[in-house]
Amino acid sequence: MHHESAKASDLKDGDVVQGDGGGHGRGRAHDVRPELFVIRKGHRHLIASPFEFRKARLERTAVKIIAEDELAQLPLAQETQLAPGGQIVLDLDTFLGAGHYMTTHGVLRKTAQGGHADATTRTRTITMFGGFHGAVNMIYSDAEGFPVGMSDTQRYGVDGTWIGRSDRTDYWSQELSEDWASRTTDITLAHFWQPDRLDDVVRRAVDMAKPIVEVIAAVVAIGGGAKKS
Image 1: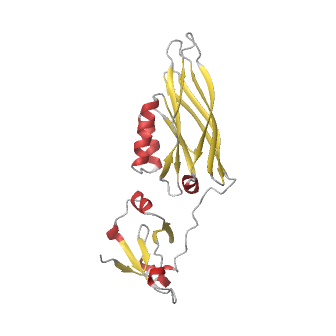
Image 2: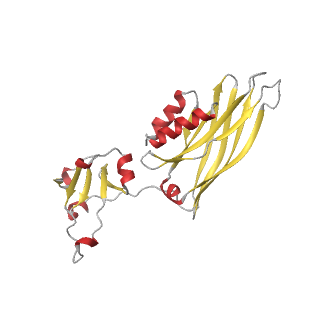
Image 3: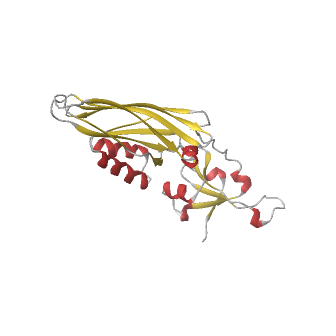
């Protein structure tokens, strides 16, 4: 397949480039490890895997070949990552309508083996007879604003104030794999009063690699609440 050749000065935001493999000294051809980049604001951002390529909705025919010395003129972007010991604070307070509320607070910490989240969720209603089942989950996203994965969906039920327990607070935790934790820079919390619907909407959006802004919009569209931390 033929690829378009380019120079550094001709590149613009969104261009996908690969070095031509030249300038590797006496290294043999099979020792060269090609790398693919997307250009944003004059910097080259590494596309680390075929999954990342598909997630960005790029086309193979759009790849431009550039001389290695030309490629080196473009500074390599320093991707923001959650360093070991770093943390992301979780905070979301949602009115779900009909007198129903959910509030989640917590923190995700990066560990040597991946990541670990500890959180509490308060589920409550002020209705006298109308209880509900609420749900909360987390969507992990990278520096480019695309989902990396999602947590398990936590489910909590309350009764109406004249029926039984109308206010409860539950602790929950979640482990992140090393791969997910290494790519996660932000977490979006989501609440909704139908656990299965929330799980389905978020999972479908994550599987389709929708931008996190679209995931939030999808949760809001069904009457839930979502916020990126």
